[in-house]
Length: 293
Length: 194
Ligand code: SF4
Ligand code: SF4
Image 1 (tube, helix red, strand yellow):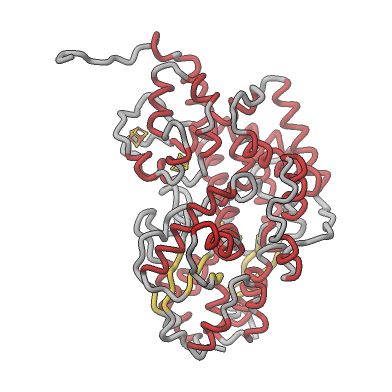
Image 2 (tube, chains in turn yellow, orange):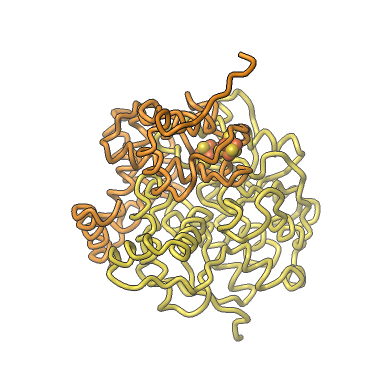
């Protein structure tokens, strides 16, 4: 069958390692929806936070080079990681409005920068290009009764003029996407707070503190699970959850899903192809209780 | 104190440094009127000795050395909350980037070495492999920072979940990446780039 949409795809470093279930479930969902994804060959690291932290020119140059590699593959650029998405969009933005920086980057990559190709986060593709109605129609197994805390983190919507994904202070795109599956998004306080991803290595104490507040807020709101769209958020909330519980003397047992894992369950991707067994906090008891596996 | 007003003047300000920050960040430092909204939303303020609004104030008052020597700039998570909310369009997140670069280039007078070490290793990884390999990054960080046992239990667990890649793929663009690094260095030597 023919694809209804086609994209070039920039997975980013995490999706090839600690977030491989995000990559796997993204491919599963897109295949089920007949959306084509063609990975950009030999893409490289966008520089993430550490590069722009101390060297903006390096960060912009790495992103510009990746954007020009992406030009060789057909379709708008689909990005899964919120951090890569933010860096690539920021580079497009800065290089469009600042001639001096653009010239420096052109020297660094020894070529013209190409800023035309739209860069889109998976959320945008699902909610806007594919469309919420069509998504709702594609649902085979509604996630009825599942209470989901949708976690945006900091980079999906900020700063206001860069990601162009949704409102920077009161976004609804994640809620809309998950509501299309029949699940129930909960209202909660910490959906836009930072998890401290940049300090995972250097200052894990920061992560234990910030991410604890996020987990506690989701629990207070009565969520069964958290849904994320970023491998860094996932690393902190899922991989470190036990550590967070120990450090704060509490217990959450809160499964943290990538949005594509939940969508995959809903649109009929076999559970074995969603990387559920890669999650550190075991989601199976919850999914069994809700009759979803 | 009734009629005391505080004026910002070029003498108190150290305009040279402020200009440097403004050029690097593309944001005004002088426009800040100290409403404090940036700090109210900053998730990292409790870890900083100077919250974001005070960083700007110190710059306005010419006390940039205190800013560069402190650890606050390294404790900024780049979450963009401050830039999103500032009523005067002060792009504080970009100012933080600029300050870190200035401190970094001056070979880090700051007390915060772990964040700098992690940044350095991350960037070196890009240069060598083209992509990030988290396990390698963590292992080297632990060795260099002397925290051998840190996250000791996390490693094996991730390995069994297949989340850590032990073998590195060769990236066919690696030559291209090396060249980007060397061209930037070249530009900087010639004074053509900051
Ligand atoms: S929000 Fe803007 S104007 Fe207010 S203190 Fe912060 S930087 Fe200054
Ligand atoms: S970008 Fe940095 S200074 Fe601004 S709110 Fe986030 S952590 Fe605070």
